[in-house]
Every structure is written in structure tokens, then in C-alpha cells.
Amino acid sequence: MKRNTVHSRALLLVIGLLFAVLVFTSSPPGSGQSKSASKSSNAAAATANAQLRNDLKWMFGGKPQRGWYIYIPLINRLINTKNDSGSPQFAAGLAHWQQKAGLKSSGILDDETLYAMIKVWPADQLLTAPISDFYDPTRAEELRRVEHKTYAAYKRMVAAAVADSSLGLAHNSHGELAPAEKYLKVISAFRSPEYQEKLRRESPNSGPAGLAVNSPHFTGRALDVYVGGEPVDTRDSNRALQVQTRVYQWLVRNAERYGFRPYCYEPWHWEYVK
Image 1 (cartoon, rainbow, N blue to C red):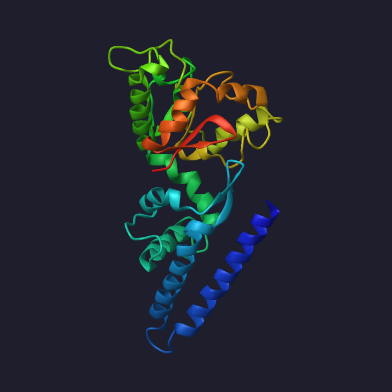
Image 2: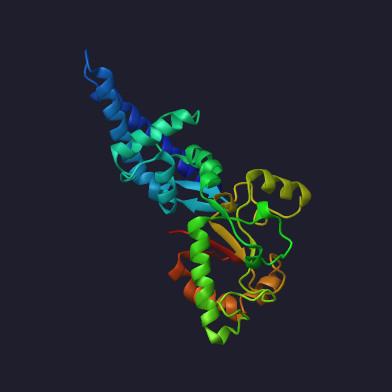
């Protein structure tokens, strides 16, 4: 972990030096210098972003991450651009957003910028899912929010699971999970940073994997779904039971078709990545 952090800092330092050199050496004197410098800055930032989108090492949900390419659709929507993430136009749009967010307007999407984005992503992209989709029939409305594309993909995936008779999932005439059926019901979806911190205070011994400081649930694109045993218990005995259930094994074979990828340490945790 320490090695990854040092590597990322060294990478950012090299990119920063390149950025500074390109700006200094390519700006002509006299009139038009500011405009030329801006173009050079965006070009240098574009070069940096083309590398960082695949190589940036950062932490999210207590897990080491590499790159931010998975989040490009969310990033593009946030900074209001359709340009390629390795283009000067993307860098210019990002720099404008950074300035509004009170960050250094470098046009480079580094870990500081990424964490700032994570805090604001879900604001206008969440819907409130019906209680019938949740494992806990008393779950509060504010805890039933899900990113809209993630929810649509989840419903398609559940419909496919219900249609697979080998799973034996109880369902109604509309092909939806029956109220008494627990498998594949959502345990947790979007969690705000404030709610996550509340959980950490209430469960100080939960550990980094259980209640991470920077959780994928902040995006509304991470779902914990019931796959058997104790819903979210990380003890080895419980996880060993969960990975043997027909529902979990079905998810391993099929969830990727609907845009979900697993987190191996938590059999119940699936993230929508399309």
C-alpha cells in the first residue's frame, strides 16, 4: 500500500514537472501569451490525463484502485463535456470545474479532484427505489436511493435471475421478487458521507473493509444484495457459506452481462461499472 502511494506521488510529480516545462517553453512573448499558455497547459494536462485515467493509484472503499476510466461517464456529465478524457478540451472543461470547486485549476484529474467529484456525483442522479426491492422492509426512504442507471440494470438482472428456474426464486405474476423472497434484495445502496461517518462512529470495530472512509456507496452505483447467510458479515465462516449459494454463483456467471462487477472480499457487494 505504501509503495503504491509513493509510486502515485512520484508519477504526479513527474507529470507536474512536464506540465510546468511545457507551459514555460511553449508560451511566446508579447501579445497572445496568455492564450498560448492556456493552450499549452491544456495540452500538457491532456497528456497527463491520458496516463492517469489508467494508471492513477488511489484508495476507494478501503481498496486500492488503478485509474478512473470506469468513472468517465460520470465525470463527463459532471464537467459537461463529451470530449475524450485524453483531449485538451476535456482538460479545459475539467480546469473550469476545478476552479468552481475551489481546487487548483490544473486540468489534471488527480486523486484530490477525484475525491471532490465523488462527493457531488450522486446529487442529481439518484432515484428512490420502492421498499419492495429491499431486504429490510422498514428501511427509511432516504436510505433507498440508487443511481438511476444502476437501478435499471439491477432490475434487468433480477428479472433474468427470476426467469432462471434453477434458482427457485419466489416471484409474483409480473416476474418480480415476491415480498417474502430475500435473495437478491438490496441491503444497501447509496450512502452519503455523513451517513457513512455515522455508521463508523456506531461501529468503531468494523474495520476498513466494513465501513470505509471513502466508500463506493457514495456514488449510488454500489449495491449490497442478499446472497445468503448473515447479510454483511465478513467472518470467514459466513463468506464461505455465501459463495456456495446458487444465487451467488449465478451472479458470478451472469452479473457482468448487466454491468456489475464483484468485490471478492464481500460476496454481497456489486458495483455497476458501465
